[in-house]
Length: 189
Image (cartoon, rainbow, N blue to C red; front, side, top):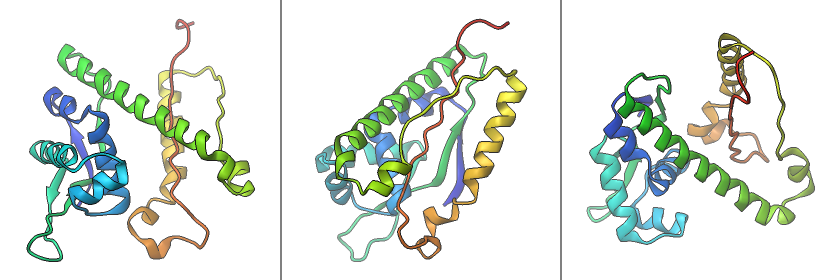
Protein backbone atom coordinates (compact mmCIF):
# COMPACT_ATOMS: atom_id res chain seq x y z
CA UNK A 1 0.00 0.00 0.00
CA UNK A 2 1.39 3.40 -0.92
CA UNK A 3 1.30 6.43 1.38
CA UNK A 4 -0.80 8.70 -0.85
CA UNK A 5 -2.96 8.38 -3.94
CA UNK A 6 -2.72 11.78 -5.65
CA UNK A 7 -5.73 12.30 -7.92
CA UNK A 8 -5.05 14.66 -10.81
CA UNK A 9 -7.97 14.13 -13.16
CA UNK A 10 -11.60 15.20 -12.67
CA UNK A 11 -13.13 11.89 -13.77
CA UNK A 12 -11.32 9.98 -11.01
CA UNK A 13 -12.28 12.62 -8.43
CA UNK A 14 -15.93 12.39 -9.47
CA UNK A 15 -15.74 8.59 -9.20
CA UNK A 16 -14.55 8.95 -5.61
CA UNK A 17 -17.16 11.61 -4.79
CA UNK A 18 -19.83 9.27 -3.44
CA UNK A 19 -20.65 9.00 0.27
CA UNK A 20 -20.50 5.20 0.35
CA UNK A 21 -17.23 5.10 -1.59
CA UNK A 22 -15.61 7.57 0.78
CA UNK A 23 -16.85 5.52 3.74
CA UNK A 24 -15.68 2.24 2.16
CA UNK A 25 -12.15 3.54 1.59
CA UNK A 26 -12.10 4.92 5.14
CA UNK A 27 -13.17 1.52 6.47
CA UNK A 28 -10.54 -0.35 4.43
CA UNK A 29 -7.90 2.06 5.70
CA UNK A 30 -8.91 1.81 9.34
CA UNK A 31 -9.82 -1.88 9.57
CA UNK A 32 -7.69 -3.43 6.84
CA UNK A 33 -8.68 -5.76 4.03
CA UNK A 34 -12.22 -7.09 4.08
CA UNK A 35 -14.91 -8.61 1.94
CA UNK A 36 -17.93 -6.74 0.63
CA UNK A 37 -20.02 -8.77 3.10
CA UNK A 38 -18.01 -7.59 6.08
CA UNK A 39 -17.96 -4.00 4.77
CA UNK A 40 -21.75 -4.05 4.32
CA UNK A 41 -22.20 -5.21 7.92
CA UNK A 42 -19.82 -2.55 9.26
CA UNK A 43 -21.49 0.25 7.27
CA UNK A 44 -25.06 -0.97 7.72
CA UNK A 45 -25.55 -1.34 3.97
CA UNK A 46 -26.26 -4.26 1.65
CA UNK A 47 -23.69 -6.56 0.08
CA UNK A 48 -24.55 -5.95 -3.62
CA UNK A 49 -24.30 -2.18 -3.11
CA UNK A 50 -20.95 -2.41 -1.32
CA UNK A 51 -19.66 -4.88 -3.89
CA UNK A 52 -20.61 -2.54 -6.76
CA UNK A 53 -18.95 0.46 -5.15
CA UNK A 54 -15.81 -1.51 -4.28
CA UNK A 55 -15.52 -2.53 -7.95
CA UNK A 56 -15.89 1.13 -8.95
CA UNK A 57 -13.20 2.13 -6.47
CA UNK A 58 -10.92 -0.54 -7.95
CA UNK A 59 -11.65 0.65 -11.49
CA UNK A 60 -10.26 4.06 -10.57
CA UNK A 61 -7.31 2.81 -8.49
CA UNK A 62 -8.58 3.43 -4.95
CA UNK A 63 -9.00 -0.25 -3.98
CA UNK A 64 -7.73 -3.64 -5.08
CA UNK A 65 -8.35 -7.33 -4.49
CA UNK A 66 -6.06 -9.25 -2.14
CA UNK A 67 -5.78 -12.99 -1.52
CA UNK A 68 -8.35 -14.35 0.92
CA UNK A 69 -8.08 -16.90 3.68
CA UNK A 70 -9.67 -19.49 1.40
CA UNK A 71 -10.53 -19.75 -2.27
CA UNK A 72 -14.04 -18.40 -1.77
CA UNK A 73 -13.20 -15.26 0.21
CA UNK A 74 -12.57 -12.19 -1.95
CA UNK A 75 -11.32 -9.32 0.22
CA UNK A 76 -10.51 -5.78 -0.86
CA UNK A 77 -7.95 -3.33 0.45
CA UNK A 78 -7.24 0.37 -0.06
CA UNK A 79 -4.32 1.06 -2.38
CA UNK A 80 -3.05 4.04 -0.33
CA UNK A 81 -3.18 5.35 3.24
CA UNK A 82 -4.47 8.74 2.06
CA UNK A 83 -6.02 10.38 -0.98
CA UNK A 84 -5.10 13.89 -2.01
CA UNK A 85 -5.96 16.35 -4.77
CA UNK A 86 -5.30 19.98 -5.57
CA UNK A 87 -8.07 22.45 -4.84
CA UNK A 88 -6.43 25.28 -6.77
CA UNK A 89 -6.81 24.15 -10.38
CA UNK A 90 -7.74 26.67 -13.06
CA UNK A 91 -9.41 23.88 -15.06
CA UNK A 92 -13.21 24.28 -14.70
CA UNK A 93 -13.79 20.50 -14.84
CA UNK A 94 -11.25 19.91 -12.08
CA UNK A 95 -12.71 22.72 -9.94
CA UNK A 96 -16.21 21.25 -10.35
CA UNK A 97 -14.94 17.77 -9.41
CA UNK A 98 -13.09 19.01 -6.32
CA UNK A 99 -16.15 20.99 -5.24
CA UNK A 100 -18.29 17.87 -5.67
CA UNK A 101 -15.87 15.72 -3.66
CA UNK A 102 -15.46 18.36 -0.93
CA UNK A 103 -19.25 18.59 -0.65
CA UNK A 104 -19.52 14.81 -0.24
CA UNK A 105 -16.75 14.83 2.37
CA UNK A 106 -18.50 17.61 4.29
CA UNK A 107 -21.69 15.53 4.33
CA UNK A 108 -19.79 12.46 5.59
CA UNK A 109 -18.06 14.51 8.28
CA UNK A 110 -21.31 16.12 9.45
CA UNK A 111 -22.95 12.68 9.65
CA UNK A 112 -20.05 11.36 11.73
CA UNK A 113 -20.46 14.32 14.10
CA UNK A 114 -24.20 13.67 14.35
CA UNK A 115 -23.56 9.97 15.04
CA UNK A 116 -21.17 10.96 17.83
CA UNK A 117 -23.70 13.37 19.35
CA UNK A 118 -26.39 10.67 19.24
CA UNK A 119 -24.22 8.32 21.30
CA UNK A 120 -22.26 10.89 23.33
CA UNK A 121 -24.25 10.23 26.51
CA UNK A 122 -23.00 6.63 26.46
CA UNK A 123 -19.34 7.69 26.33
CA UNK A 124 -17.20 7.60 29.49
CA UNK A 125 -16.82 11.04 31.04
CA UNK A 126 -13.09 11.19 30.22
CA UNK A 127 -13.90 10.83 26.51
CA UNK A 128 -16.76 13.33 26.68
CA UNK A 129 -14.35 15.84 28.24
CA UNK A 130 -11.61 15.21 25.66
CA UNK A 131 -13.73 15.17 22.49
CA UNK A 132 -15.85 17.97 21.15
CA UNK A 133 -16.30 20.91 18.86
CA UNK A 134 -14.69 24.30 18.65
CA UNK A 135 -13.62 27.04 16.32
CA UNK A 136 -11.40 30.07 16.22
CA UNK A 137 -11.39 33.08 13.91
CA UNK A 138 -7.94 34.20 12.77
CA UNK A 139 -6.66 36.71 10.22
CA UNK A 140 -3.91 35.22 8.03
CA UNK A 141 -2.43 35.40 4.56
CA UNK A 142 -2.61 32.38 2.21
CA UNK A 143 1.05 31.61 2.99
CA UNK A 144 0.39 31.75 6.74
CA UNK A 145 -2.63 29.48 6.34
CA UNK A 146 -0.52 26.91 4.42
CA UNK A 147 2.11 27.12 7.17
CA UNK A 148 -0.54 26.59 9.84
CA UNK A 149 -1.88 23.56 7.96
CA UNK A 150 1.64 22.10 7.74
CA UNK A 151 2.08 22.58 11.49
CA UNK A 152 -1.23 20.86 12.24
CA UNK A 153 -0.27 17.97 9.96
CA UNK A 154 3.11 17.70 11.69
CA UNK A 155 1.43 17.51 15.11
CA UNK A 156 -0.87 14.73 13.95
CA UNK A 157 1.93 12.86 12.14
CA UNK A 158 3.37 11.58 15.41
CA UNK A 159 0.33 9.28 15.68
CA UNK A 160 0.18 8.06 12.05
CA UNK A 161 2.00 4.76 12.66
CA UNK A 162 -0.79 3.67 15.00
CA UNK A 163 -3.23 3.48 12.09
CA UNK A 164 -1.34 0.56 10.54
CA UNK A 165 0.48 -0.91 13.56
CA UNK A 166 -1.83 -2.06 16.37
CA UNK A 167 1.22 -2.79 18.56
CA UNK A 168 2.00 0.96 18.56
CA UNK A 169 -1.38 1.81 20.10
CA UNK A 170 -1.24 2.45 23.85
CA UNK A 171 -3.82 0.80 26.11
CA UNK A 172 -7.01 2.85 26.26
CA UNK A 173 -6.49 4.44 22.84
CA UNK A 174 -9.17 4.45 20.17
CA UNK A 175 -9.54 5.83 16.66
CA UNK A 176 -10.28 9.55 16.61
CA UNK A 177 -11.02 11.54 13.50
CA UNK A 178 -9.84 15.12 13.52
CA UNK A 179 -11.71 17.08 10.88
CA UNK A 180 -10.08 20.27 9.68
CA UNK A 181 -11.81 23.04 7.75
CA UNK A 182 -10.15 26.32 6.89
CA UNK A 183 -12.88 28.45 5.35
CA UNK A 184 -12.41 32.11 4.38
CA UNK A 185 -15.02 34.47 5.84
CA UNK A 186 -15.49 37.85 4.28
CA UNK A 187 -13.45 39.72 1.68
CA UNK A 188 -9.70 40.16 1.48
CA UNK A 189 -8.69 43.21 3.49
